[in-house]
Image 1 (cartoon, helix red, strand yellow):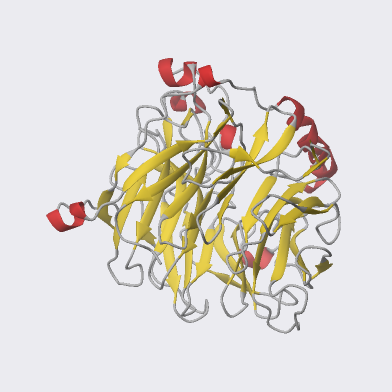
Image 2: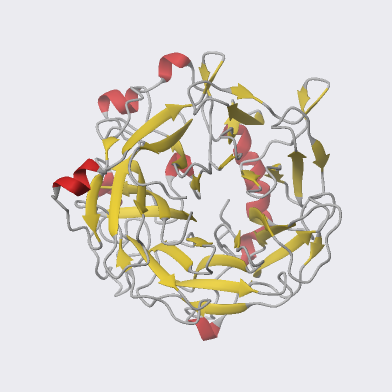
Length: 488
């Protein structure tokens, strides 16, 4: 969850857990929206220029949406993450009935689901959390399920696809922490014996963006070194006293062990890079076109090319690539499809070199217009310009954008909504930053077979979907692309 000011730090942390008791209404199978998928992707170039060639259209994938239903009941969700094992098993975090966190599992591409949550004597061992997080180590298939607490995090890991779990109730490095991300990759300086990869845990403590690491697969965690980002950073262009906060996005470890942590930092897209397992960091500014949220996506391919996605000051999604370890970056490319007017909550994954997938929430009827607010500042706050009333009829969809030649000077992109646009996932405002029933982020993973999967939340079901009223409920869904170019 997001914490906005240092003076409100402890109060906000307490509010996180209070929200969990009241934040989301339960839903039943009768509440479900139409569940229709988004259909064929649009082929386009950077900047949203549509491509009408027959060859591009023939190769366009189709977006499919799978609703997560267990025993006839939809699963609630917030801040969704997902992971896939090498043989295609899907794991998704669920916030069920305002009473517990669950791990939903599918062995058949999302067609059916069961629960594989950490349990003791038939009861879920994890504390209730509105910061659930799941991650599958792409090298070992170990599944990590982690839920934030005020002090640290409860974490469980499984090596048998969720049939059994080992639980660690102190999985962080130091209290107090918020808005965590967990990821893993090869070591650089540490000799490994118990587990082949280092597991990193990074979090926002408002005063900084800090990380810890585990060299035993999640059993114990220790601080890495200096923070990835300082909370106060006048040199990065922070306003006023230079306070930029500690909120960051999901981390990534390259094949050579380099650690990457992206962040909308001081209103610009930044990337923290560590080549010594987080002991020290180098921070680089990716572009100068601003950012509308702390969220961003980063990944590196087998050749060391770094891909970075964010929503800029104009609230549209952009992609930049570095071919020299982050020293320089390509000119940002707006990767949204024709007609996209506003986007939020970007995430990214990469497959083979040049093959990238980006996820985000997007709107084609947003009233947003880039410019200045009444006080001369940029339109970066909800309703700054235009007014919040102008968003009442705005609809938001779950987008996936892919490219199989992102290293080229003029890449080809395919973009699709996982949901039917007539049945949106959100109505009204969705950011910048927090997005109603979704909250702080969504997720994307490129599977071993080269297909793309995204984690979303349907916050517009029942009356909302049918009559256009306010958001009701919060159902977990996954989207995936069928056909089109393979990304592995």
